[in-house]
Image (cartoon, rainbow, N blue to C red):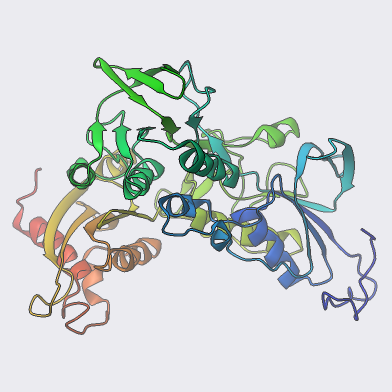
Length: 477
């Protein structure tokens, strides 16, 4: 690439750099959510910038969150998982992996998958968006056996799909009952495959309160998923020509044609650490709210970095696709001269498991207590819309607030996936973002018509139940 302005008549439609101003060469390492968001925003703010994105595979800005729906058959064409297919004015270098960063020289050593040759690429500004890698249970034998898979990349998704379609599978064991674990249990049951879900917690799905975890477990069981709770897997071994045996605590043993390990992810920081970038206590890259690392001229964003927690007012590790997009946008803007701050996250998440939707935002009671609050959680049940209109569905809403101040600290909702669970958790998330009190939710002017809600929205009914409990003094002191 030449370090000079592009022609105004260039096919990309770029405008030339301002007279007398050096053109910025921005290099982005990583082509998923954060990396592509950074590149797009940089080009929006400075159309003269030369922006290149290094992508280790062939799938820029694909929705890895969509892999369970590809594997279930609900989204049969993997190409539909692409968030976008046009990257005007941005150089996407597929099958290029960064292997070393040299901050003093402002160069990156890059290898091409096919040739293996190493070349140096120069940059003026650098964004590291290497994401996360699957957690591998330490000391667990058998993780590298044929038929054992993780699910973190498009290549992982293709490997599982090929196994299911070419070799077939009568039974699958899933190790881990978090988001990927429960979604894949749903996906595989849709294909008629026997599923055993092994969870180290009991109940499953520990990101929500146990009361909701039990309901998630019941939904899985109703659809034929065998649940093994409070079990730590200790060994995976060959059990025949095309079979694997899994054993764990509590005398658990089972055989399957395929084992999927989904116990979470950790930040991919090897490249950053080798370059001298400081890490935070969580093991993720330490960044400012401008997404600056500890090295001048280098920004970082996405699942490889710490996230500013808006409620706790300190860094935390919250790897979420929505957060990665936002952080990437901030990093890209600032890398070309902007002054934007990442406002922070409150940890809003939602998942669909068969007919259920489960969502959470903010802090659970135990998390709030550990952070020094005096939390109280109150659960209420109500209809998603007026019961006299057909197909009303029950919602269960758990509101966590601070006893001393009345401040909203978190919320969880469980209900039918078509009952507006995600829309309503977003109301709580907005309130948390702005530091509102639980009572303040009752002042919100929310929409109403009988097919969709009630004059008091279920969010407000949940808030009123919490306030009533506080006023009555019936909560535990």
